[in-house]
Length: 301
Image (tube, rainbow, N blue to C red; front, side, top):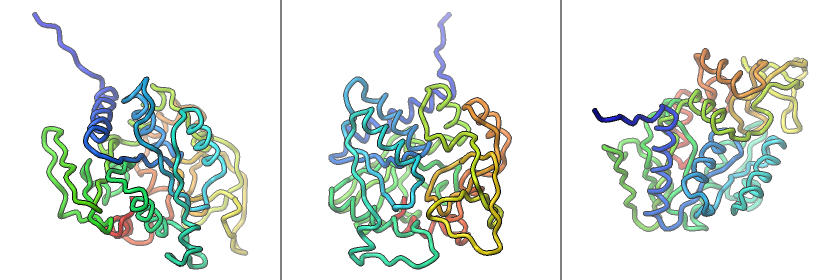
């Protein structure tokens, strides 16, 4: 009688992601890992660290900075990079605004402007593979993504040009000027992410856990009072106990009322929700039914 060996669900996801990260490091010349300080990029960074431990990361980290991040997230980003001794590159949207490459419109978020900064940074550093923390369960356009997502010389994504991925075999072939976006967390869900955070004790910005904050209700979301948000005369601020399910720009990312202050409490709360974190708390995803797919075709994450 032979003894069987079976990985748990989380360990199987971890093994798959580590395999993807190692495959990229072995077959691409200049990979980079997008690290914003959010929960998904924190988990992806932890998986990369485990993939090469005790050696250092064989590629740098990249943050596309809109200039409108939560202060707590930037502090966490810098502390994490210092702790790991990693190399951090920062592409600033403000640099593209100042150079006239993009135009900022009053009252709009800088979400769409990130695309130009990302593509410029990829060109300048000649990156041929870019790790991203997107998951298929987040949004319907992201559900169309392969693990290896081919981007043409303009950084554009064509869902009809996606390559088949059978038996965990990935096709990273590309010409000069083209690159591949790589999504090691594609098969993870929000619940998987939180269960892994609890199991691996992954550190996160404190905004992901319950805290008291001044908020305002707008378009069915609670937006936190901060220096990037302008309030209308008919909007009333109030105090609430909230946490963030996802972290984007401070002027367009909503929070949810919650008392979940530990990973275990967040897991219990997440297990009963029916809305993805982007659908529930990201105003920048509500521009149209095809908003995310349109941005991805232009070169967005």
